[in-house]
Length: 247
Image (tube, rainbow, N blue to C red):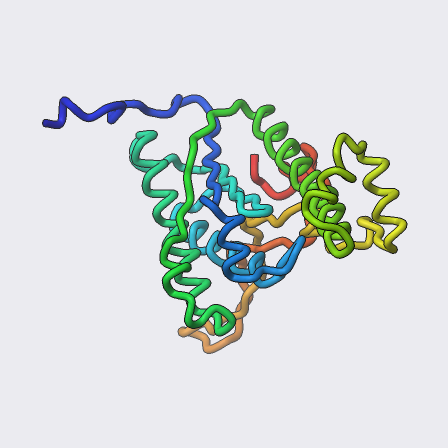
């Protein structure tokens, strides 16, 4: 019955850079169930970044970028002979499992196994040119910034108003008006943690490690590639991606 499989032979373009984007399914409901802090919960961000670390070790991408419940991987070697169905299904299931294992290991969420077991991610494959890679991550970082601005605006007003009143107050407000609302409540987004404004990145960095030469019994220094979880990303540009040897 293999001939009945739909799109089983669909493969990514062999000349393109491939980004795989994963999104949490029904995570707004999950955040209410697990009582994550709003607009940002540090422990949730730690769980997502640690799960992404497992993803990095398994598939060895060139770069992972995450914010909110979204993870984007820039692949190095494309797995599964480039089969789109395989990439999407395995990436989504792997991330679902990694996130679930990570969150179940936290004492804060003990006793909530029913809700935690329903965690899942969806996945999509995005072929890009070299220039398209930079533009893609710049655009996702801008989305992270918009999430930050809108999230702080909404949850700041929710301390004083109902959901309906808050939505009315924020309706069609420009970014400058949202900043003014936050300033009136003593909030300057420029002073918020960088990971909330710009997201979190994972990439490899050469680090020096010490070891013992078994022949001479002398201490020697060598370089190793280490996966870095960067909570203080700059604004993305071509220089960043070149310096980190991402593209």
